[in-house]
Length: 115
Length: 111
Image 1 (tube, chains in turn orange, red):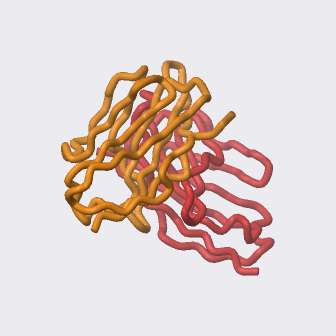
Image 2 (tube, one colour; image 1 turned 90 degrees about the horizontal axis):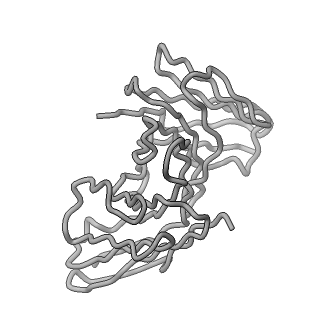
Image 3 (tube, helix red, strand yellow; image 1 turned 120 degrees about the vertical axis):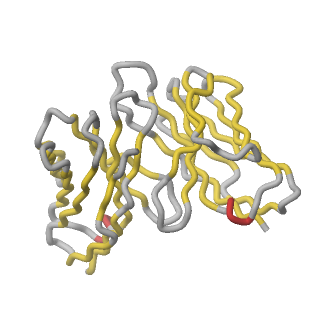
């Protein structure tokens, strides 16, 4: 199984809503990532979890709250978002540990629209 | 910080070769990658090259690395319509956690 599964594929939410994006992998990878991608732009790193601990937070606003319940699951909790947060949110995983080529396996993404 | 630049657009005829170029600034880059993104989808790793190599070939794909000039290229031989996508080069310092993506090149293949 070489898949990273993201749900939901599409999400529309108002600025006062609370919602969550979910990501799952069963490749035994120990590093998991959230990226944000705006239209016609490259993915921008938001968070990295390594061995279920948050290791990188790229100064993301607190209205985005990541959670890694176990080594296979990664969530992104959303609260009080702004319309400019509308984007494709990509989850990725990698083997983790060293030596490591850093190859990322991406999910299909969750397309978020904030009204 | 790291900076990875690519030209925005490339158009080729089916059957021709495509060459997508990338320049990067981080001299500590250990691995360099090429990812493909089809419309509405996530990114898929096509190939990668370790920084002490200057060439890697994988079927229709050839990666060339000029470390002195910090220039990376991806050549796709016999380009097919299914190759139409956005191609991102990316680099990592080998710390495995932070991969920086280039601006992306949209490849259009004309039948």
